[in-house]
Image: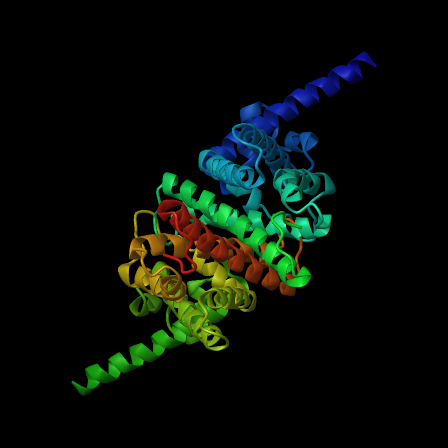
Length: 220
Length: 220
């Protein structure tokens, strides 16, 4: 029993080294620069031994992605604590923090979106769950703004807001179209998030006003 | 002289065939599926002869891109004519038309954003100009809404709006995160564009109200 537990411990340590090496490699050269043979060399195991530590390349990339998501999660939590809890300001801070994270971890962040599973394979449940967890950051402020909307409605809205911010970050950082300095991009993201959310609040208010014949200051 | 002009005519015809074949190939297999050797075969010229018709692969891809942009331009013009000239509705229709175009021409549309020039080369001026022309569709309604803003300010705003819509289309069509049916995506895009623009209008109004101590209904 002691030997088995020691073997497991060693395997866990090697897996950790493998993930760390893979993360470093993706951060330096992008997803296309990930070579398992080089990884095996770096952590000092035989080529095939990599697949005793992870199932396949998809599994390896998803595990590195999971570490990236954990760091993004920490960055968003820090951004939340950095200012007032007012939901519109909160959403705006989260969006800017997302932009900053992408700017500082460009290759690892890109890998989250570029990675495609082998044909015929679905992204495993645990990885989907990790991605979904991050939506809680957007969900919280939206619940505060629209307490009567259903989780499904808020889920759609959260995804739309995220996609819009993601688009600004992608085109901003890739400098496709016109080059835009990071400080301008951050300012624009804050402005657009506030505008989107205020616009949705306004629309909800107008819908209520027209429907009920009354003006409400609180939304929903 | 007659021979020279005939030779030029034939070259023009072959170039047209080459672009058509490249477009078909990208539409079917994406940018990664573009093989100049196969193209030469399809249009019946020697391998090297392709480079008598276009400068290099970048030039070929950019020329196909230019055709895609021309069709997108036509789709946006049609969307503009399909409803009222009211700027917020106009912007919303344009955004949905962009989504539809991307859904119907996914690989060609993707190629516009995936293409990277060879290291050390810049995208040529004529191609940048073609891309910028399309921003006129967003610029027009923005000028109507914010007549006193400078072209630079409106340029930044146009790019932000475009990037936000582009992000929603990218993540929506790629079915990354949660799968979303096209009709839901179209509705969400229309909603978010209206919300963004109305939110920006609201902010401009509030800025004026706070600054001047007066309430204005007209913006700017």
